[in-house]
Image (cartoon, rainbow, N blue to C red; front, side):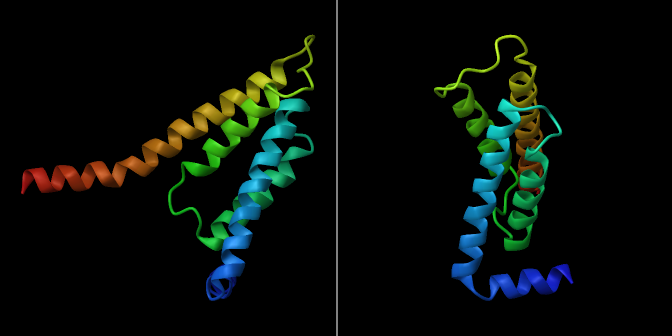
Length: 124
Protein backbone atom coordinates (compact mmCIF):
# COMPACT_ATOMS: atom_id res chain seq x y z
CA UNK A 1 0.00 0.00 0.00
CA UNK A 2 2.81 2.40 0.88
CA UNK A 3 4.50 1.76 -2.47
CA UNK A 4 1.25 2.44 -4.30
CA UNK A 5 0.81 5.79 -2.55
CA UNK A 6 4.43 6.72 -3.24
CA UNK A 7 4.08 5.78 -6.91
CA UNK A 8 0.89 7.78 -7.32
CA UNK A 9 2.41 10.85 -5.69
CA UNK A 10 5.54 10.59 -7.82
CA UNK A 11 3.48 10.26 -11.00
CA UNK A 12 2.41 13.90 -10.48
CA UNK A 13 5.63 15.87 -9.92
CA UNK A 14 3.86 19.09 -8.95
CA UNK A 15 1.88 17.29 -6.25
CA UNK A 16 5.03 15.58 -5.02
CA UNK A 17 6.81 18.93 -4.72
CA UNK A 18 3.85 20.43 -2.90
CA UNK A 19 3.69 17.56 -0.42
CA UNK A 20 7.48 17.72 0.09
CA UNK A 21 7.37 21.44 0.88
CA UNK A 22 4.40 20.89 3.19
CA UNK A 23 6.31 18.11 4.97
CA UNK A 24 9.30 20.37 5.54
CA UNK A 25 7.04 23.14 6.85
CA UNK A 26 5.38 20.68 9.23
CA UNK A 27 8.78 19.65 10.58
CA UNK A 28 9.65 23.32 11.08
CA UNK A 29 6.33 24.00 12.84
CA UNK A 30 6.81 21.02 15.12
CA UNK A 31 10.30 22.24 16.06
CA UNK A 32 8.90 25.66 16.87
CA UNK A 33 6.22 24.14 19.09
CA UNK A 34 8.73 21.82 20.76
CA UNK A 35 10.91 24.79 21.71
CA UNK A 36 7.90 26.62 23.16
CA UNK A 37 5.91 23.83 24.85
CA UNK A 38 6.35 20.64 26.78
CA UNK A 39 8.16 17.72 25.14
CA UNK A 40 5.76 15.08 23.85
CA UNK A 41 2.99 17.62 23.48
CA UNK A 42 1.19 19.07 20.49
CA UNK A 43 4.24 18.98 18.22
CA UNK A 44 4.53 15.18 17.93
CA UNK A 45 1.65 14.71 15.43
CA UNK A 46 3.03 17.51 13.25
CA UNK A 47 6.45 15.88 13.23
CA UNK A 48 5.05 12.45 12.39
CA UNK A 49 2.92 13.79 9.53
CA UNK A 50 5.89 15.79 8.23
CA UNK A 51 8.22 12.80 8.23
CA UNK A 52 5.61 10.55 6.60
CA UNK A 53 5.02 13.21 3.95
CA UNK A 54 8.74 13.40 3.23
CA UNK A 55 8.99 9.62 2.98
CA UNK A 56 5.97 9.34 0.69
CA UNK A 57 7.34 11.92 -1.74
CA UNK A 58 10.81 10.44 -1.60
CA UNK A 59 12.08 13.88 -0.77
CA UNK A 60 14.64 14.50 0.42
CA UNK A 61 16.77 11.67 -0.91
CA UNK A 62 19.24 12.42 1.86
CA UNK A 63 18.33 12.36 5.54
CA UNK A 64 20.09 15.49 6.77
CA UNK A 65 17.61 18.19 5.57
CA UNK A 66 14.83 17.25 8.00
CA UNK A 67 16.96 17.48 11.17
CA UNK A 68 18.61 20.61 9.76
CA UNK A 69 15.21 22.21 9.32
CA UNK A 70 14.32 21.14 12.88
CA UNK A 71 17.48 22.75 14.23
CA UNK A 72 17.07 25.99 12.27
CA UNK A 73 13.40 26.33 13.23
CA UNK A 74 14.27 25.73 16.88
CA UNK A 75 16.95 28.40 16.76
CA UNK A 76 14.52 30.80 15.09
CA UNK A 77 11.93 30.09 17.77
CA UNK A 78 14.48 30.89 20.45
CA UNK A 79 15.52 34.17 18.84
CA UNK A 80 11.96 35.34 18.19
CA UNK A 81 10.04 38.11 19.90
CA UNK A 82 8.42 35.82 22.45
CA UNK A 83 11.06 34.95 25.07
CA UNK A 84 11.65 31.41 26.24
CA UNK A 85 10.29 30.71 29.71
CA UNK A 86 13.12 31.91 31.99
CA UNK A 87 11.95 29.66 34.82
CA UNK A 88 12.16 26.43 32.84
CA UNK A 89 14.14 26.70 29.58
CA UNK A 90 14.50 22.92 29.47
CA UNK A 91 12.05 22.56 26.56
CA UNK A 92 14.22 24.71 24.35
CA UNK A 93 17.40 22.90 25.37
CA UNK A 94 15.80 19.50 24.72
CA UNK A 95 14.64 20.66 21.27
CA UNK A 96 18.15 21.93 20.46
CA UNK A 97 19.79 18.74 21.71
CA UNK A 98 17.40 16.52 19.76
CA UNK A 99 18.02 18.56 16.62
CA UNK A 100 21.80 18.47 16.99
CA UNK A 101 21.95 14.72 17.68
CA UNK A 102 19.54 13.94 14.83
CA UNK A 103 21.54 16.12 12.44
CA UNK A 104 24.83 14.46 13.34
CA UNK A 105 23.28 10.99 13.02
CA UNK A 106 21.70 11.84 9.66
CA UNK A 107 24.98 13.23 8.31
CA UNK A 108 26.80 10.08 9.44
CA UNK A 109 24.21 7.86 7.74
CA UNK A 110 24.31 9.95 4.56
CA UNK A 111 28.12 9.90 4.40
CA UNK A 112 28.54 6.17 4.94
CA UNK A 113 27.88 5.12 1.29
CA UNK A 114 30.06 7.94 -0.03
CA UNK A 115 32.97 6.94 2.16
CA UNK A 116 32.56 3.26 1.24
CA UNK A 117 32.63 4.10 -2.47
CA UNK A 118 35.81 6.15 -2.02
CA UNK A 119 37.50 3.32 -0.13
CA UNK A 120 36.54 0.84 -2.85
CA UNK A 121 37.89 3.12 -5.60
CA UNK A 122 41.10 3.68 -3.65
CA UNK A 123 41.62 -0.05 -3.02
CA UNK A 124 41.02 -1.07 -6.63
